[in-house]
Image (cartoon, rainbow, N blue to C red):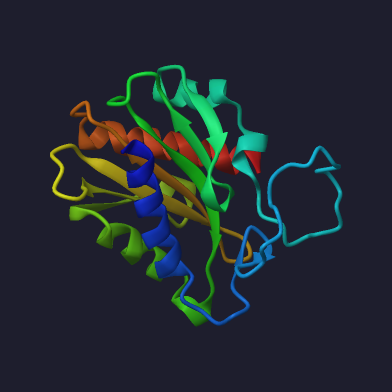
Length: 191
């Protein structure tokens, strides 16, 4: 069920940000590209593709994410190359780190921001001015009782680094905002 929530939040956010023409891209590939985006053991360094978006499971360790959360996590690469992280207890905080391209033709960062908030019930938007153009939205999801979080930070070139947090342990809004901000900073530092 945890992964279903992550995928649901990510897909709505991606749809909100990706409502453009047929040339929209996800992680530097056309959205209709059916080729594999996983690691093939080849050179992931200077590939000559300057449009490639960061793959955060390759750039940030589970230990670094665990340090931001205050608990050990495991990581896996999920849909759209997001870096999913989980704890052993399924009720504990888990989530994902990813990237999405936004542009003027699909509403830009503000469209992504409103789409992220729209996925949550009774959403509260928290600007993260210390990170630049960044936010975290908190609220409940799908009639649940616990707060969840979804946010992002706009970086050069119309790219948003995204974070999604889900939990079943009655964490406070401030805890989710603080952890989201720490993860977004970790992504900025890694990329």
